[in-house]
Length: 483
Image 1 (tube, rainbow, N blue to C red):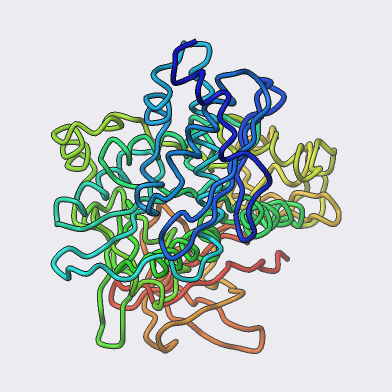
Image 2: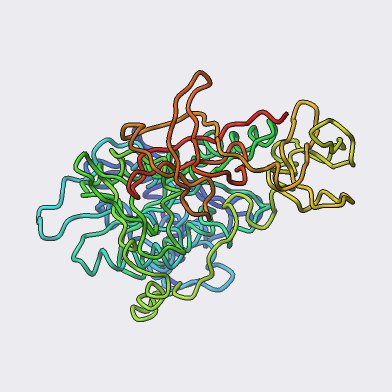
C-alpha cells in the first residue's frame, strides 16, 4: 500500500455523522461490497463542513477520506471540479482493482453537492465582470450539449455545467440514455475535461411523478402521451433555470436546436436553422417566462457543423451516436416497460370495425395507437388502420385509411401565450409540417379547424400552435368520437 493510501485509509479527521444543515450522497452497495457516504454543508458558496463514512476495502475508506479532505474549505466551483482522477491523484494512484473506489467517492461527493445546491436559496452572487457573464449549461453527455458549452466558453462566459439524473433502472441500457447514472458520469467527465465545474441534480422522484406515471396512465387509458413535451415543460428545464438564478447566472444554455424571437410582446420559440433537427415541438410547453432565461447556442447551426466544431475542439464525444429512444425506455422498449412498470401485460381483446363487427384478436389495446397498421395481422381487401382504442373494453377499432381523415381536431389542456385568433397553423406530430388552421372555442372546448382534411393524430399527443411561424401555444390532442 502506498504512503498516501495508507494515510487516508486510517484518517478519521472527517469521520462521523453529518453536520447540522448538511446534505449527503452515497455510492456503492451490495454489488461491489463497498459503500461510501459523504455529507457537505454549503454556506454562501463555500463548503464549510464535510463528514464521510465508508464500509469495505482500504481503498474505499481512503477514497472517502481523501474526497472529504479535498472538499473541506473549497469553493462551490472548486468542489464541482473534483473528479475521480483528482481523488486518485490525491491517493498517489490506485491499482486497477482499487480504482473503482475513487469513482465511488466522486459519485458520492457529487450527489451530496447536488442535494446541497438544490436546497440552498442563494449559491453565488452575479459575476463581478459584466464582460464575462456566468452561464449554466445543461449537459447530457452528448455532442450537442458539449458544443453548446464550448460555444459559451468561446464567447467568454464563466460556465457551470449541470446534468439531471432522472431515471435509474437496471433493465435499461444506461449507456444509451441521456439521464442515467452512466450519462451523469459521462457528462461530468466531459465538463471536467473542458475545465468546467459540474453539478448533478437527482430529480428521479419528480421525473417518475411528472413524466413516467402520466405516461403509464395515458397508455392504460388508451391514449398515446408525449412524455418529452411534458418533461421539458414541467420537469426538466424549470429546476435548471432556478439553479441558474441561484448561481447568479444570466441564463441556462442547452444543446437544443431551437431559437428565440421577440414579437414585441415578449420571447417566443422560433424554428432552428436546421429543419431536420429543429426541436421546437418538444420545447413547446415552455412558458415565455422561462424562455426569457434560456439560451440556445446551436439554434443557428446545422448538425454537421456541430460535429465539425466538436472535432476541431477535440471534444471527446464528438462522434458519439445520438439516442433514438425515450430515455427511460432505452434498451428495453415500450412493451416491456409498460408491462413491468404499468402492469400492462398481454391481455387478449377484439379488433372490430366501426360497426362493431369482429375482425380479429389483439394482445392488448395499449400496444396500438391511432393511425397504426403494423401488428394488426388482419386479412382484408384493403389495408386497415387503427381508428381508436377503447381501453375500458380492451378493443381496437380499425378501418381504411380514408376513415382516418378529419378536418377538426379536438383539444384538451390548451395553453395560449397570444390571442386565439392569431393562431394560423399547428403541428400535430413531431416529424411533420405545420398545417394551416384556425383555433375555435365551442361548447365542447377548444378545437383546431384545419383548412383541409388530414390523417388524424393520436389522442394524447401534442398540438403545437403557431402564429407567423412562432410558437404561441400548445394543447393535448383529444379523443374524437368514432361513429
